[in-house]
Image (cartoon, rainbow, N blue to C red; front, side, top):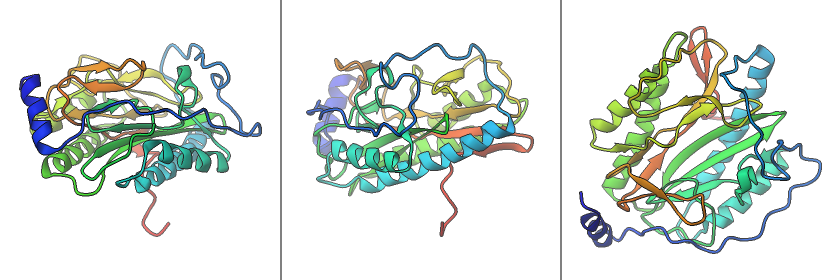
Length: 301
């Protein structure tokens, strides 16, 4: 599809292209909250050169961090409604993370100015929460990560704001399905090519693009670490083993997966201005296969 045709379709459907809003001042974090190494300077030190195998103590910490990250993501998603700004959602989630004794992991990571990422419509990822007001029909992704007890928890979800058209709902459902398909292949001895194939198969059958430039990653005491987990077809023969913990976070696009980064240095957008969606879980490799550390809590909890 040509870019001009994509723009025409977006205009006819009433969809909004991304435009930068006003970014509010930095928020306070109490001195009592333990901070990651980059918190004060924004400088991210070099992490491990190879994938870490986590021991039982580390895994239990990561379980707790994953559960907290999930609660914060669910809270962010529940706040998304017509008339609400992404900055207001960031402020509320920031306060709740801090109240839980944790640090919002994106905050000052390489200078990122907010506590979550909020990526509406044609924003693929890394959207900066701002004065932009969510409107009926928007599709918005929230990437919520925490640092607690010396480790990170990381997850992302996409929600429909108000009455979203059928095409938008299909994109969201397909992206969630791509993540589920990728998680299903995780087990000791599996290689990362299988994850890329599973995501790509789920996208291809529905005619969606798969973003190549942004990957899942190892996670633990370091926010972003090896292995890098590609969601497109690849030749990465790295084999998983018990104790590996990493994220899978496919980003699917309605049209072309070609992208560009806005002048703010963070916001990643589809070049053809079509919508994108993203889902992410933190996954542990176990003897039996895998455990999703950021899974929703059982109903009733």
